[in-house]
Structure formats: structure tokens, C-alpha cells
Image 1: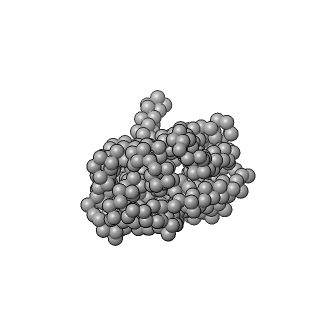
Image 2: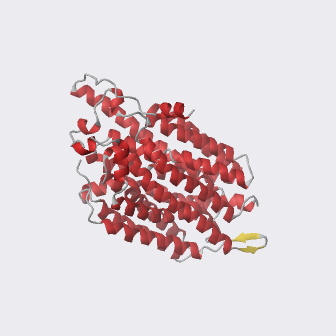
Image 3: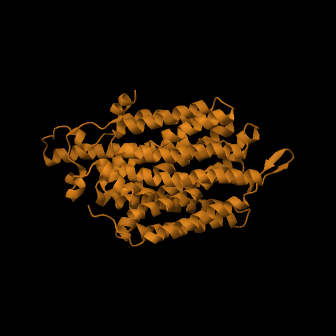
Length: 450
């Protein structure tokens, strides 16, 4: 059975090279590049729709008495823990896989889990299903970046990576705005239902948009196509596994992984608990809270899309300088959002929008781009998986700790639970600040030229 699954997902052998004129080659290559890029961008966005549905339904579930904050923290933590290990494992696999089949299958299976979530009220079933969702979700990011490396050259990768990275903002925006409306009108079960239906539809569409490696279609490797330096002879003689293991020994990759983990504490603190925070502390309705938080991914589209361009155009592809700029904005915006004077909706909207802009760029660099600049193209999936392992262990730890702190400090008022966010806010803001400090310790590390 395992061998059958492995054969299904394995990348195809190289096809005989097509005899094409330069004009014909450009036409074929450009067509594939655009369909692949549209596929990974839209596709990964809908992975987020199938992941963040739980964030929107938390208060309705708490109010119905089905689960409490501590239980929801455990459910969130199991997804992120499994996702952390899954990102590493699936990242290693992605370097060997047909991305078209691998990524499409992940989204379809994640969507099915969401549909099933709407039919239970039992904690352990929630816990198991959401854990499975974590594994299927891990079939999205690394395959996207592998596909990006297969079809786009290193010189253009920063710009295209930044644009691709807005995909998570697309998914977050759909979830916080559209899913909130559905949940308010029809109930939390329909929130899972609409997320599952959207994910299932996009998973099928990906089968028509994504592609395997260029060589499997009789096209040249992208380095050859773009006249870039080929890997050193020593690296060409190494097996894929040897190259993957060597890349994971780079000290800078470990530091970037830890910095990314801390940024994910802040990012998922806001993503997972932001709607509840705005309802509990600032007394917005669910739709109002979802709309305000929805500004984060909406403006985050600009932050992510511009991150690679700003780095390539204004800082000579120096990711460290751009990380500093985005990181300072991230910490400042969090402080305004949480510590600014109450009763000013415009301040909440502006600060969360700036946070969305800043965190999108910060995660683009710490969550992958800087690390893959330091390592061979052939091991992109493994490096993304390795960084992702750190990132989502941080996110998982955040969900568990945040849920514990909120449950420990809650009070009951007229039969309703009221949560105190003071301690978790210091936890989230402190993690963002420490992440930036850690990221700056690799300031002098230079990217590879080939």
C-alpha cells in the first residue's frame, strides 16, 4: 500500500528534450510558469481557509458550552504540533514528489476534515480530526516553494516569493471576513462546512493548474533556461539526502528557524485569539471583530507582495535589512493594538493593518526566503520543512500556553466566562521583540551565488 502511494506521488522521470525554437520554448515555459504560480498562490491561500476556520468559531463554541478555552487551546495546539512535524517530513518528500498531485491531495484531504468537524460535539473527536488536519495542511507550503524553485530562477525568486507569500493573507481574509458572516448567520457548524466546500473546490482546480518539474515535460532546468550558474561539481556528486542533511547543519538555518518560531508565536497569537480578544476586551460583535481582524491579512497582501521587491530593488537582495524594517513595524503595531487607548475603532483598524503588513514580510523572510537563499535549489523543500518545523512548534506552544493562561485567569459573570488577556499579550509582544533580536545575529551571513 505504501509503495503504491509513493509511486503515485513520485516525480516523473525526465522526458526526452523537446526540439523547440527559442520563441516556442519561451511560450511553453511562460505558460507553465504562470499556471504554476497562480496555482500555488491561490491553492496555498485556501489551505489557510481550511486551517483558520477554528479561529472564527471559538466564541460560539464556548458560548454553547461544548468546549472551554483550555480545550480549544489543546485542539489548536495538536494541529500546529502535527503540522510542525508534518512540514519537516513533507518538506523532505516534496523535493522528490510530483507537486501537482502532492499539493492537490493535501488540500482535498484537509477540506474533508473540515466538513467532518461540523458533525461532532465531542472533544476527543475534535482533537483527533484537527490533528489529522495538521498533517494534511503540511502538504501546502513546502511543495509551493519547491515548485517556485523548479520554475523560477534565483535572481527573480525574491520578487516572486514575496508575491506568492500573500496567499496566506488571501486565505486569512476569506476566513475572518466571509466565514465570520456565515457563522453569525447560520452557526459554527456551517463555518466548518463552508471552509470545507471552498477547500474541496480549490483542491480539484489545482489538479489543472499545477505541474511537475520542467524536465518531465521535455523542458530544460530553470537554471539552464535562465543562464544561471549550475551547482558545484561536488554538490552534483552528492545524493539528494546528503544535500538535505548538509543544508540542515548550517548554523544560520537553525537561528532563522528559532527566530521564525518566535514570530509565529505573535502571528498565531493574533490569528488564533484575536477575534476572541476583540469580543472580550473591546466588546465588538463577532462580525465587527472579524472585519477588524480581517484588515490584517488584507493589508498583509501588500506587505508580503512588496517584501521581496523591496529587498531585491532597494537593498540589493539583502534580506537582513528588510527583516529589520518589517520587524520593527511588527513590534510597534502590536504595542499600539494592545496598549493603545480604548474606544478608538480607527486605531484598532490601523494598528492591526500595519501588523498585517509587517508580519507578512517578516514571516516571508524568516519563514523561508532567507534560508533558501543560503542553500542549494535542489533541497528547497527540506529547508522549508526544517524552518517550518521550528515555526509551527512555536505556534503550537503559543496556542497551548495562551489557552492555559486564559483559562487560568477567567472569571464567571452572570454565568458567562470572562477572560483576562493581560498575561498573554505580554507573551505575544515579547516573542515578537525577541524574534527580531535573534534574526539580527545572522546579519553578516551572505546568500549563495549559484
